Image (cartoon, rainbow, N blue to C red; front, side):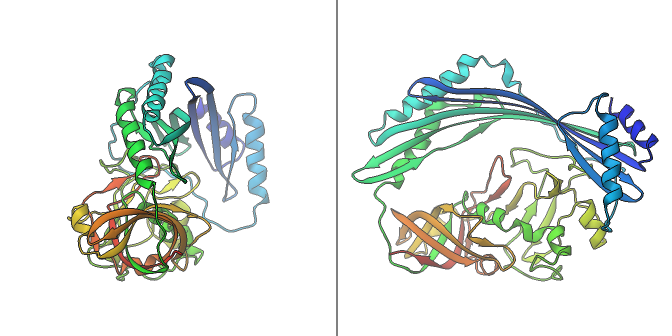
Length: 436
């Protein structure tokens, strides 16, 4: 089917043509007070047609391809190419010599009875409601996604991948005296049998109750530890500085610093599409380039940028297999852990903070300068122990300075299932805190 359309494009004068097709199926379900409140199921076919005409690369997106619309789309693609005046690399990739083997069992969530999905949510809701501090479960939610990707081009490339997963969570409201907090703990699985509503409810309750009774703290400078769920937020917020696109646009402070020391000796940050510790692995990127493990910072030394075909050509380097969602993107990007247990990590801190929540990660971050100013919350550390929750504060610092001042790395590496960013708990040193 795709080959037929590629031949038609070549006959129209395109030098090369590529079809990137995604078939996705989604289901979402929510309940409220024991009743199904929302249920939606959808299937979407999305296609990106990429072509080179008169040495100009262009692309267009469509909801579907068929014999009825292919001529119209190809003609539009050619017209788009004719209108381009910018001089940029025009590349359709012929394929890598070898591709890593990625084995991933794809579970068919369609075979799970609808009643089982509803009963999972009902159990999750009811278990959470048993807690004395829970005033309401605003919603219990379940979703599942199946994604099938195909990449075929006129240079003989023919690749495909499939992934599926499901998730569930309940959004609960907790109250103690006048203090109100919310909590939800998302469980993401590749097999429906991995859901355990009782355990998940316990995690949600533990998180919600632990936030109650927060106290204000004075503004000042405090030793700060980020949890293994929050330091990855910083890695995500500043990941663009490692992009080849940012490099050739001179929008990264790391331009010209390849091979230079930008962090402490114990800091190694990896981009690893093949990581066995991550939820998903990737054999190739969206342009057909083979994925591979790369140390972006190794023992404090910046090793180089990640690239797609375009940025690699402009920078005159090899592509790194990092083209996803039509941009240069990290995949399983994480800080390697240390050897300290959490108790050992916080033991030296007499009066500090353990950050477990961050807000404003878009507005409060300046990737080029490295500075950040974020609303946060967490717990007070007193004499090397977690003591009590703290009310909303503002944490300020600089990402580049943190890389040079980290005082300890935990051994509790966690990689987010969906975002792919990860780290252990990190004792970053002293940061400015805005409090009362």
